[in-house]
Length: 253
Image (cartoon, rainbow, N blue to C red; front, side):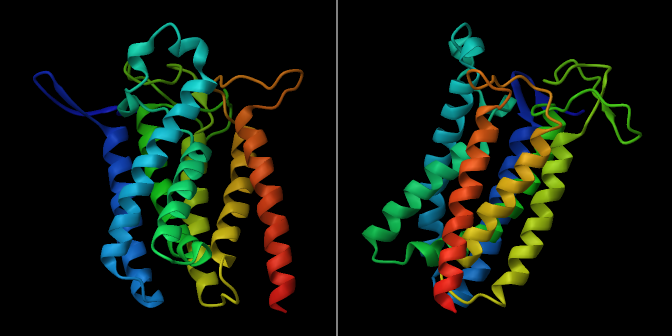
């Protein structure tokens, strides 16, 4: 599509990085607004954002590298090149949740309350960031004959060129925007702490499983199965979050 936004001499601004940054800013803006409603100050939001973003970025990239070790073992210098694409959302979730747990324990805050605070903004940020994936051609789909298929022609794209593909990046982006809208609606009906966070994990995992059926990039398969590590992670998160959601909902009644 349009992987390189602008090149000035040896410096290239990548479209992927721009949209990831825009997604982060959008998530931060929404979370600050919601934090005021929950009595959480903007400085605390900024502090949480800093530690979550740093940790989530590292764990997201590490999981991607592990899933594609065959390539990165032969090209180790490409491991830190996140501007070319290659971040796994579930890896980011693990890092961000760990960082959030550390922060809330240190500052005597509720982990569930903080999770509810960040869930809508995270969905919005991911939706915007996926547009960057589309521009870079990463996370591309399987060959398709549908009229809404996309064809990548830029030689700098990571997707196969001149082949009609499912626009899986846009599927994920649309799912993120829908989930964001649902979570904002649920905030007005929240009955217990953690409800928004758990619904985010359930909805995102379900959406991810749907989109995974159309992904065409090679991310390896679990031994003896046709399941990718991403699908396994989504299934585990969906089951665990669903069980906790059911238990908390039952107790709230």
